[in-house]
Image (cartoon, rainbow, N blue to C red; front, side):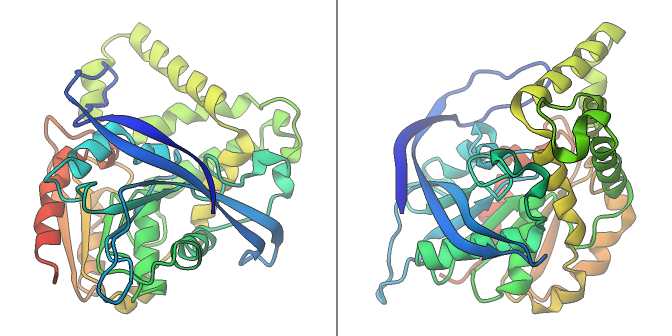
Length: 362
C-alpha cells in the first residue's frame, strides 16, 4: 500500500447545499487518510487491458478485528457519476452520519471512500490515453472495488455498502455479484434496472453532444472542447428539485448567471473524455435479472422529487417484490429535499439508516 499522506478533513455536521448558499453550522472534524491501490495488467470485460490501474481511496476510522482476526467494522462508501469520493466526503453527507452517536460513528467504523476508475485521483482517460482508454462499465468498477476490499485491504466481509446514484447502482450490483461479501446494503437514489426514460435520454444527449462536438476530434483534442458544455446545465437541472429551482431562479438574469456558473464549473473541473467515458459506462447496467441472488438485508432510499428516478414509473414496486430481504423508503418532497441531490443530505434520511442498522444481527 502506498500511503500518500494523512490529512484532517473538517466537515460540518450539516451543510445545506442550495443555489443560495449554506448556513454555517458547527463543524465536525474527522481525520482522513489518503492511499493508493495499484492493479497490474487489469483486463476489462471489453477484453482490453491496462498494464496498471491506479485506484485512489480515502479512509476514516480504524479497522477492528473479531475473535477470528477478521476486520468486522468496514463500510464501503460509493460516490455518484458526477464526482469522486469528495462527493461522499462532503459535510452534508458525512457529518450527520459519522458524528459521535450517529449510525456510522467514525469512532467505531472503518469507512472506505474509493475514487472509481475514470474519476478523481484514479486512472482515467485524461491521464494520457484519451479516446484510446479502454471502455469500462459498472461491472469493471465493481470488480476493482472488490479487489481493493478483498485483496488489498484483506476484508472478507464488509459490514455495509452504502452508495449514492451511480454508487447506489453499484451497491445493487455488489449484492448480485458478491452476495456473501457484505452484511447489508443501502443503495440511495438508485434503481436496479437498466437506465431508461428521462435518465437514459439525458445521458444519450450528453454523450452524443460530446461525440458530435467538432472540437472533440475523436477524443484527440489539444484543448478542451466547448460546444458540448451548453448541455451540462440540463443535467444539473434534472438533479435539482423543481421547487428549489423555482425559489432561487426568479429572474432571467439569475437564470443566465446559473447557466454560466454550471458551464464554468464543468470547464474548470473536468475533461470531456472523462465525462464521456463516465456516463457511457452506465449503459451495461441491469441488475433486474439477478435480483434473486441478493441475500443481504437491503434498504433502498428514494426521493419523491427525484426527476432522474421518478417514482411514478412504478419500477421499484415491481422489483422490490423479488428482493428477499429488501425494503424501500420513499422520502416525500419537503422543505429539506432537493430532488436527486437529496442523496448527499444525509440528515434528511439518516434515521432510516439508523433504524435499518439497529435491526441487523450483531
